[in-house]
Length: 123
Image (cartoon, rainbow, N blue to C red; front, side):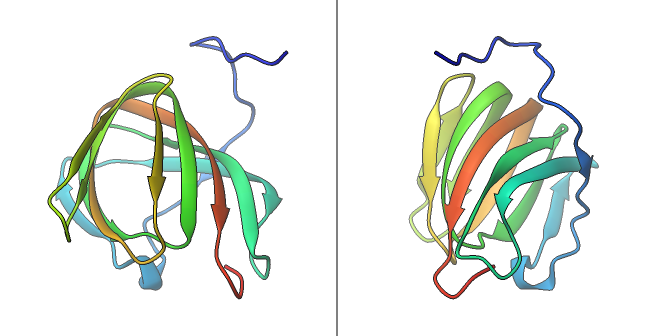
């Protein structure tokens, strides 16, 4: 049985800048910094899975692909611009975002998540 213990090393992560034009990032508060790693899939594939980490701050983006995530550490809230729904997430919480959703991520404590995504036609 695999179980993540808060504070465990998730392995090497690389800097993931807020640079993808299709995501249309807009910084809202602070100066968040993201890191990540793809463990499966990626460009040209319909699926991808990996680890993502983001420091405190807030940004708006358009989600790229359907994604199921579980928060390993930290706290954040995700606001869906279309519905106004706000998800408050912490360790152990799962969430699902849909391809094309415009959302605001507000990270109050550095967040680390594991994710699995799917995008018909590939990322």
